[in-house]
Image 1: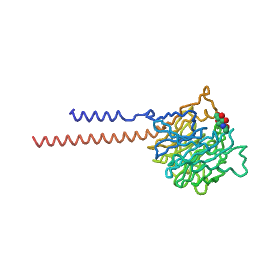
Image 2 (image 1 turned 30 degrees about the vertical axis):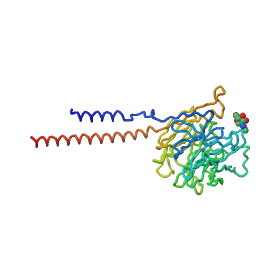
Image 3 (image 1 turned 90 degrees about the horizontal axis):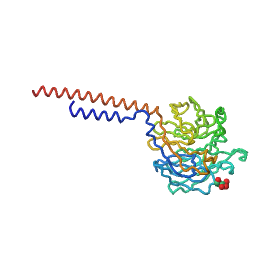
Image 4 (image 1 turned 90 degrees about the vertical axis):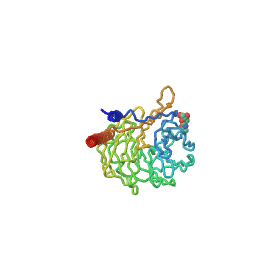
Length: 375
Ligand SMILES: *[C@@H]1O[C@H](CO)[C@@H](O)[C@H](O)[C@H]1NC(C)=O
């Protein structure tokens, strides 16, 4: 073996050994961040600032969390009702606005609103819009629950009402109306295994698609709906399974994959026909203890879930009266997709190797020919 062949063989071996063999799960990005008593429910990603944004259970604050887990306070809004909860979060990148749904849990007085903050001016509040109840609806009996929010490209916000199964729209000036009250939202059976944590929770995660519709998931039925952005009419998305206890959702830009999180797992879904039908092509078990509630797509289309332990915060069930200080944001990735990627890597390497062999064969012939000529 000549020295150059030896070097190439070693290089080739190094490439092979360096391949991401199965169980790349160990490379997933885990961010632990410290913020005593925060118990965040909402999570989003700000692509301009390249950081995560999380809400708070009772402190009327919104924070950024860096890749490395450094926490900064973005917004402190003491005009919100005392102990109000920040639920859904969304960034309008074009207008540099941050939207947050605000909700008051019992025993606080009923309150459901959407707040918009200007990220250019250090978080100045642009509006705080109370979200209107249905006519004649008594909030003292069952209150509205403003839960998640999505933004369209004109700066309108769409907010789900988990208690009453409808969607509000808040235009860019902060004018709030009831936008979609499709009877379909009340047509599906509640899942048999729905426990008290989500039995009364209807419409929840929502996202906007620039083709002119919204996708929204319903926790207690596990169904997904496609809602027209102009008329508010809804259609049931046909799926190969129910997304029982579905909470937050997000979309990957690269391939339009939709991810939906529940307290137990993350589902990955694809559609070929703009969500008349969709397929759940993978589901990933999550850490139930961490009580995941939100999912977002960050830089390089990486999917992250929030472990905010909200139920512990609500129940006050922390040990010895000590509030929890640490929370987590963790990357999740589909083994199935990794598997496919790996096959592509092997095919590429195989091609490279074949090409290399062919090249050596040619070189040998060339050298033999030259030897013949010179001799
Ligand atoms: C807010 O929470 C604190 C701590 O639990 C409590 O002492 C206070 O009374 C609450 N405020 C309201 C308005 O309920």
